[in-house]
Image (cartoon, rainbow, N blue to C red):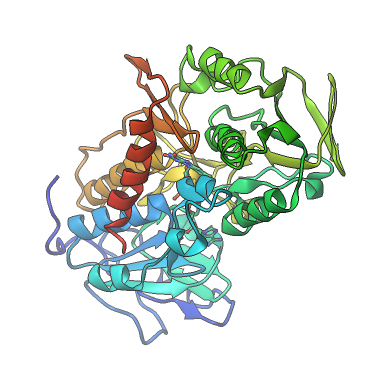
Length: 425
Ligand SMILES: Cc1cc2nc3c(=O)[nH]c(=O)nc-3n(C[C@H](O)[C@H](O)[C@H](O)COP(=O)(O)OP(=O)(O)OC[C@H]3O[C@@H](n4cnc5c(N)ncnc54)[C@H](O)[C@@H]3O)c2cc1C
């Protein structure tokens, strides 16, 4: 990929900040289409002529990979990151908070130094909308214009099932994982039910992997504490073949492992609602002292206000180049997006990284008026951890790999976290 070291004469102008703290789009007239010769004008004094102004939304996996790749591609551009806080949460290691293997401070990464190194203009704000065909980002701290945009604000959970207040959704973040730890510490026995469901309109928008990990992790923890016999563990999902997305052989392997560990299952029944200490499905009820449940996923909350095209499942609709449907110089990566591809594609940090790289490279192509757009590879690579062992899984269009649980893979997952976070620490 060619690096962009200077602006081509035909590229537009940029306007760094449109309106701050007014909440009004007063400077919407500054908008300019990339790749034309318009010179934008603005009432705002921060206007910078002749320099590209790129914006990246979010500070998670996709956003940070987009930052690195965008800076590589556009060494001279003004790059603005907009996210609520200059920090990243390394979500895959939340599974180790209940056992104490990780603490909040291990997983919350302050990004101030990273942003300084990459010469990023960071704006602490929450995106509320993207308007003017992608050229304006509306936030709770004002509106910001751009010449090119990468959206990476993640997704959210579908909150439709009644009684979700009675469950802990571990993937909501550090506080939820800590709550599980506290509950486990306070329990002397009882039933723990662990389950997940999907988005009926988007097979990719499901997060099951971590729920297997919480389930197996709790089993291992209770065994280590010599009190597993005081607990009943029940796994519940509407599907009869949980984990099938990871590969054809995966459901059998995971269910056999559950049987081996004395974990009961309640499979193939639609979840109707939750009550205090109760999971109610179309196939019966599970009485439980603690319920961990991951609802299906959908697009970011701000999308509801937006003119951006949504997929059937409520995510930002993109093409295979990660371009937001119908918009110029506007890309999406990670959990926010819906991408064409196989039914088994997953919402994973790994996919988020691949999409973010493609998005940043394609933004370069587009702003330079080139057309060598790249796609990203559809593949799932993960290690399903049990706190003592790891099960390596890989799926591509050509091949499906499933390895037996091994100690080595548990340590590989821990090592990967260290290596990955080196970029940002
Ligand atoms: C417990 C757990 C275990 C996991 N294990 C794995 C694993 O082993 N391997 C794997 O590949 N994946 C794993 N995943 C999935 C992976 O973490 C996600 O797919 C990945 O985080 C998606 O990256 P993202 O950048 O799209 O979204 P996120 O990482 O969720 O980042 C979204 C960013 O957007 C910001 N944001 C949100 N709303 C706004 C707004 N309105 N305005 C501005 N910014 C906003 C957030 O603050 C955040 O910085 C796991 C997830 C969980 C929860």
